[in-house]
Image (cartoon, rainbow, N blue to C red; front, side, top):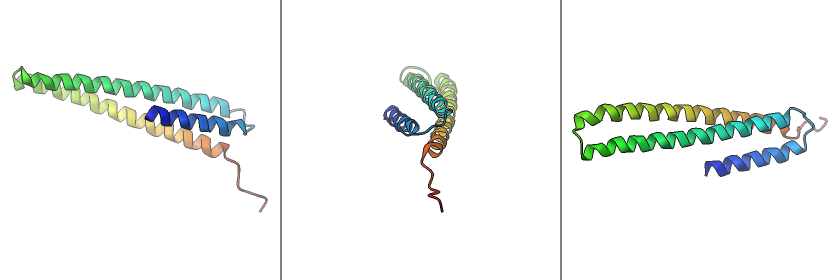
Length: 112
């Protein structure tokens, strides 16, 4: 779902940029696209961390809880860290896209 939204946003920005003479716009679009790819990679990393955490929790079925709790806490810290990184990256990408959208929108100064 996020990938689809990011792809749609990128395509819209490409369309808007095609009407703009700003030579910097293609680079900014490429940068935003690169950032979106990095975000996708971070999402996959977070999914991996969640799977690792799930595996640690599953150990409660067979291992002594005193042995499992420290490992679960460690994995939880990793997941929280990945989540924060992902959130920061998403916020940054949103800002980039909003800035690009603002810069490529037709101006409303209509000669007033």
